Image (cartoon, rainbow, N blue to C red; front, side):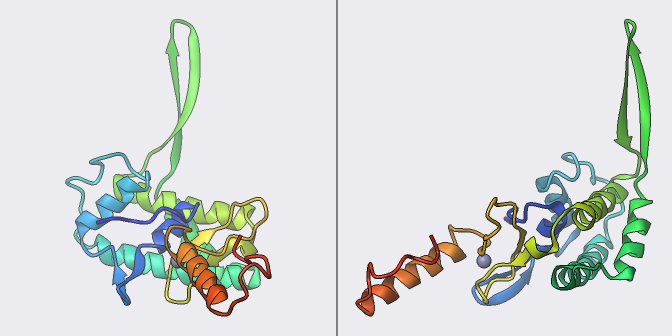
Length: 199
Ligand SMILES: [Zn+2]
């Protein structure tokens, strides 16, 4: 099982657990093991954190959460305003994972740190909800996009300076489009006449 981490935001990487492979839509979050594997691979939870936790119903719940987020984020990207229901949903999940401040003292050196206090599953939902909240609060809706390949479902937040990222990856969709454009130009005998728009 390999996941895609090219969304530049945790929440967008969660959306990218639905992929198209060999022309078929495939959901990568099938069972409890997939939930744990994704949470760990995404860095949302430490290794083994979900072991022994009641994750039996979780794939279905997480898939439902993901699709609600997808609808809300797509609406935000299109119109610049998050749906009201999305804000309420985020607050519910943020409340599952409160942070506590801890103070420690060692040889007169006193430090404070904040740590998430929720159970592992709550921390997973909390981390994704925080990612969406930060996206809505501080990011540009016009930079949340779907890959320009119509056959690809992957999404990303464009962090490039120019803000012109079009592809999920240059190794896959971008590279294929570039190769197609190259052969088309060569076939049409227009090689070298115009700049490659994909450069
Ligand atoms: Zn793509």
